[in-house]
Structure formats: C-alpha cells, structure tokens
Image: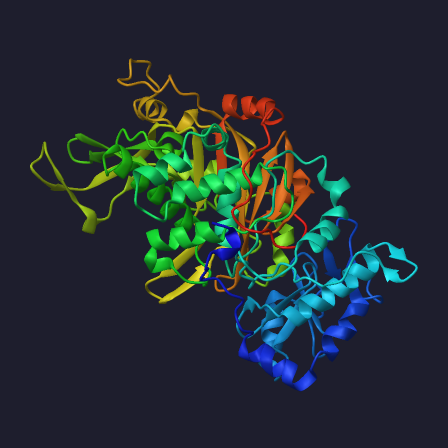
Length: 561
C-alpha cells in the first residue's frame, strides 16, 4: 500500500480567531511589509532583523537574552512577558512574529499559530535570496511550498510537491551540516509538541537505547505478525531511529508516534502543551507495558528485562530510624529517574551565568543552586513531622523517626529531574522556580550510594556492606540536557545533546552547534548522564554507525535542521 493512499487524521488546523481578525482588518499587507525585515542566514534559517537595530532588545526592559517578538500592528519589539502585557493593553495587537524563528505568535492564545499565507511570504523571500538566478528569473521553481511551523500537521498523502523545495532548502545548509555526527536531525513541531521532541532527542542519543534499535533488537515485521495491536510505541520509535540515522537531514515528522502515544495515554491526547518529565515517564511505561505483554514480565518492574528498565531503572533504598530506640526499617523501591528539589543554600558567585535569567521578570531569577547540593539534599536525613509518626517494630508503638534515602543500584542512564514547577496548597497557585542550576559534565555518584551513606552514618567505619554496588561504575558523563524557558503557562522545551564532546541545540526542527557556556547558562529541567565507559565507547562507535536503509514513514516537512 502506498503512503499516499493512507487516510490520516492529521490536518492543517484553522487559524485562531485573533489571527483571523487581524487578516480581516489588514489583509496580507503586514506579511508583505515584513519581507523587508526578513533575513535568511547562510544555513537557510529565516529570522527578523530591523535595519535600524543592530542588537534588538525588549522595548520595555531592554532585555536581549530571551526570545523577542515583533508586533505586526505597531512594530513593537518585546520579550515574552512584555509581549503578553502589550497584548492585554492594546486592542487588536494580539499577533506578533518570533524574531529568532520567523513564526507567528498569538499573545492572547499564548501559542505559535500557523498561517499558510505567512509561510508563502517567508518562502518568497527565501527563494529571492537563496535561489540562483537565470535569464528569466529564478531557475527550477514553479511552486512555493509551505514550511514548518508550530501548528503544522504534516501527513502522508498531502497533495504537495516537496521535491523541489526540499532540494532548495537543504542545499543552502549542506556545508554547515556535513560535519554534524550522524543521528542529528530536527523533529517537526506538530502543535505544542516541543515537550515530545525534546525527550525524543534524548532517547535518540542515549547510547544503550541507540544500540538496541540500530541493531534491530525490535523487529517491526515480527512484532506486527505476533501482535494484532495496530499502535506499537516500540515500532514507531524504531521508525524514528531509522529515519534519523538514514542520512537525511531534513526535519522528520513523528506523527505516527504521537498518535500511538495518544492511544497509550488517552488522558494526555490533545494538542495542548504537556510536561516533558511526565511524557518521559509515560513513554517508558508504555515501552514496558508493550514488552511486558510480549514477554510476560512483572508489572511492577522488579527484575524486568524490557529495554526501558535495562537502560533507565535503578533502585532506591529508604531507611527509617526510630528516634526512641534506634531501630531501622529498610525498604527498596525501583525508580526510572530521581526527582530533586532545588538547594539554595549552595549559592553561586555574583558573576555566575544566572545573570542571563534576571531579565525574565521573575523575582526568583537571581537565586541559584548546584546539582551536587540537590543530591546532598536528596540523601540528607529528614526528621518526619508529628503527623508522620511511624509504627516502630521494636517499640511496638508510633514514634518520631528519621528518614534517609540513598541509591542502592545505579542505572546505565541516569535521569535527574529538577523540580522547577510547584503548587502551593495554601496560596492555591502554581509557579515556576526560575533559579539557575550549576551542573557538572562529569558526575561521581559514589557519595550517594547506599554503601557510602550507611558507612557515613556510622562514622565512616570500614565494615563489609551486604550487597555492595561495586559491580556498577559510579562515574557518569553528561550527554543531554532538557531545558524549559518562559513561564509556567507558555514555556518552550529544547534539548542540548553532547556528541564527541561537542554540544548541539535541538530546538524542534532546528539543530545548531553551540558552546559549553550556552549549555551551562540554560535553565535545565532534566539532566541525563550515562556511565562514563559507555559514553566514550559510544563516541568511538558513532562514526561507524551504518546509514539506515529504511526510508522515512512520513514525508519530511520543508525546512532546515
């Protein structure tokens, strides 16, 4: 069956009411006049640049560190916070343009919006600047294809000729991308799916997971023959791996994967923004559930041999000590990640990169923390309150107690989740913690293992520790960072990926090389480490990975990665 014959539920959504009102009042005049400010970078990425402003900044706070927006009604440039206040104070000024990405943004809907007329205006400018001219004008162009945007749903069978436009777009970026390692490919935003794209970029570059899929450990044909389930997350992840490692650099649309995930997490099936950490846990649960059905594995995940648990699963130890008699009760719980509270006691110097966050408008921007401080806080003994008294087996009554967590077994890939979002039951409100977090690229988890914690509890006495963790290395190297920028209600996720000691920024369909300073200054939300031996081994093997022979399951959107 050809891909063009498949009927798909994905369609290009209608514009929001505010965009429709703007076009009804102004027509396409705003789009046409905007072409004067459109600039096409050598890598083919469009952006907005006013001729009279060398370094654009927010007209209200002069901040230039955040993403800036240009109001289409009055040419007012502002950061996200002042864009929203400008929308509220000025009637009819809802529609703006993201200066960095040249995409439409609605300040009332607080989301990127899609309009094919705007894409045509951008593509016209692109063709004029990038396409070689002949005697009769532009050579080889007879159509203007729509480009990637936040609200675009690309599906198989769309009646569009992508071949000419794809060749045009990718030719402008061929030199810049030729030196990028294989496996770096942009993922199109299908409508508020930056949370999904950011996590997928992590999974695509996690060495144990990458080896699993590229070695065909999950065979799609065998899976479909053995199961009548039409939607298989593992099969769709396998498709993404094949597409990303095919050598094609144009952005890929993981639409089939998104639809399969919706079948697994029906309560999250919408085009609304979701939490990246919640999606990560839901995805691993879906992988475990699929392999569990196939292999009849334990549902609780203990000693599970599915790929999700083999890569990400660790074991936490919880010791509860009675403060009256000293009796200690120990329990063990499997974990797929470790969630950490911020520790502001480990403050940084005044010249730390958190200065970049002060322009965010959040009064918490000047605070800071360290990942080591967060781990110390996680394993620090905690006195349980009077309302949390536990029954002591030795005293045979409820007593005050101390609780201490430690890590009994480390995973191959360590996910550290930073709790940046909190809800106050007293104020009945939620907020984002906008502190800067300093994190190391090399991490020794030895001090947080159960053996180290218990020995420290007894004055660092040297004695045999039952079930010592020495068979697993405690040395880890960072390989990916998921960051969240913006506010609680309207933020954006991107991922920084480390390959061969070089950093790359994966922002939906765009992939660019960045320096360490950019990564360290970001607002990290999830930090991923892999065992050091696996990291260096993966770097050696990365250049030997064969290009996948399987073709994409979906047509790529026109754009540059």
